[in-house]
Length: 383
Image 1 (tube, rainbow, N blue to C red):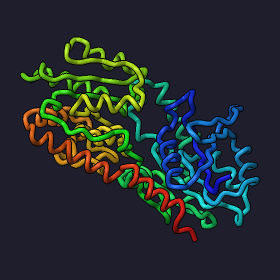
Image 2: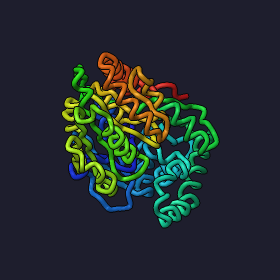
Image 3: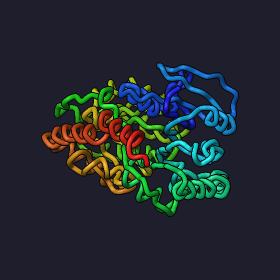
Image 4: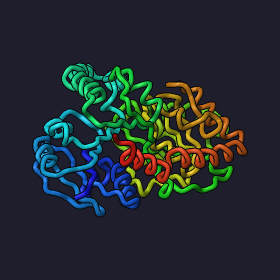
């Protein structure tokens, strides 16, 4: 039995390697630092315990978690993607037995429903369903967060993945700022995404690795950028590789099938395969309509790619225009085309930005940086 417990909504297993894989990277990094964490996944399904890469994973509903917390004493409980059911067990403990608590706020669990409104505009049924969720899910979640952020008997800390995510999304949604709050970025695994110095020819190779499940991933902009670049005299010198999967893949990418230099790779890319894709390209085309951090952009930067994306959400906290990447205004097609045009015409700047991007993101969100900050929050400063 360890002193620390993580409660989350999903965790990787051999049957599902990609379920919150970033949590597993944290747990393994904690282990290497001598901090061992038990893991509980909240679920309504009856599931046996599993072991994955040296981590014991238990599956429980809120009542089982409550019993587990009463039977076992933990110094600190860590929450990812928190909701009232996850927290039920804490509320059942008497005040003098409540553990220290650290809550990570990543995205959807701490935002207003309308932040992703564009995902529902094409389907009235989806919009209606989302409006119902506003009352059934979003309002109770907001009240819950406000409650735990202001309850004096809780020894609780909150971690936000970016300052802009906190100030633009979470603070306006919840309406209060907790006393103990920290900004610690999601890990960019610089050991996996190793830097490789780019040549001037690498700027001709442009890749995109994105889900095609919702409009916030802005893959339609990627398609429009390529179509607009096709009018440039140098277009045939460029090579595009688009990777991803989801219900929108075929319909979004269909207009690109006429271009011989655009290659469509439909399918989910394993994380261990991404570095190889990065090594073969120089520009990462990753437009976005909504991001609390932009982890895929950071991973590309760590590998030495120059990201071309939008100045929205948390992204400008990690990318400085023409210094560590290229930023376009929201939904601005011309800005993105101009960014690639600039990188094509300025080879020295391309190589310089590539180098600076890798150095910057490693310093800001590399494994060692993030894990040291998180362990300090988890272990220190409790009264």
